[in-house]
Length: 259
Image (cartoon, rainbow, N blue to C red):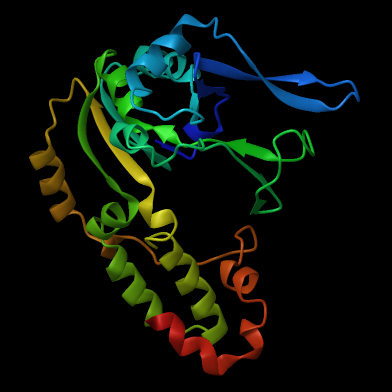
């Protein structure tokens, strides 16, 4: 099982030009500043990827190629002779790329939980991520003996495992109201359709012969009553206070979080 692993892999960037796709590289200008420049693509796997997924992209469109995926899948396949692989991450499928829905690329930078920084500034102090191409990942895993059982979003996945039951049990706990709101807010973030709830959950198997029907039957037998309601501790980020810093001084506004 991995959670937000693949988005952290290094990627190659490309841009579609009138002369075909070019690789976006980094060089130094006359003022000794790091700047981007376009160069010919020499990596054959990168060329193959763009031919497969870049058809229809408009001039000026940018994208990323994760060449490390094949190495990772091969490693997992060598380690796992029989079993399951659960991949949770944010990403897209081929149709979203071909329809130019992400024509400016998906590379993002984060620092202190804020994004929008230049990839060439604060080097070593920012996290750089890019969305996962799940269509590409699916094709690679298929070539290494894995079969996809199901791919759904995180909201649907968690709700099928009793998320709403856990949420209701949380609300019935005898804990201080502020603590209740902090925990509830954080739990709801996991299924929010404006955030984590839209993460993709890819469920795959290798030599278990499990199909989607089998998986759904297992989910029906599972009960979240067997799990203790997870509560925040000091190692967790208080998302409610981070997003609404005055929430602990405005108890009358708490009811809105139940909606």
